[in-house]
Length: 209
Image 1 (tube, rainbow, N blue to C red):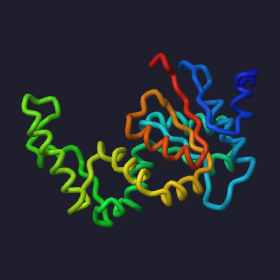
Image 2 (image 1 turned 90 degrees about the vertical axis):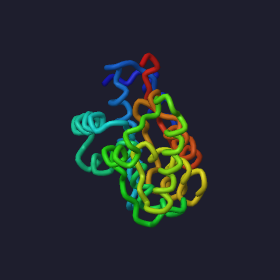
Image 3 (image 1 turned 180 degrees about the vertical axis):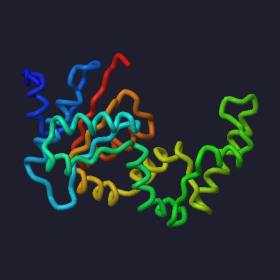
């Protein structure tokens, strides 16, 4: 990749940054170069650069690009995860601080449909859906069961309440790269905002999507 003046601005940046560009513009490549530079500066034991994306397919593409762009030792210090995986890691370790049992269980979609009778949010009777939302909160508090779509809200609640956990995440990940930031949900974005107070964040986005 040719490092033009605009790309050099990102490489020289010592704070938060937003990288804009369409498909094929090199957002992933320049982000990986930035990650490599941070790794070369030096990381403490247990630290790595966190690269967050939304799907396993996207994580796979980043992993493939990293094999082309980074040395093996650098790849070992690049932690590529989906948002869900990152949130689940937080909740498994610290979810009890939200009042749940220490051991959490994922409430799989098919099990959730059995428990709620197959109701959907867009039904004609919203009170049934609202009652189910309350019941889900009860399942989290009493049995530690949590569906996928509560990962981000609960992670945001956890980070909001605990500066200590925000510090732990920042100490582990001195740089966080957010993939496809334009698609970030409100709760996931709140997590990014909260972590940005303690660590450096680089967001990649395509505003045309």
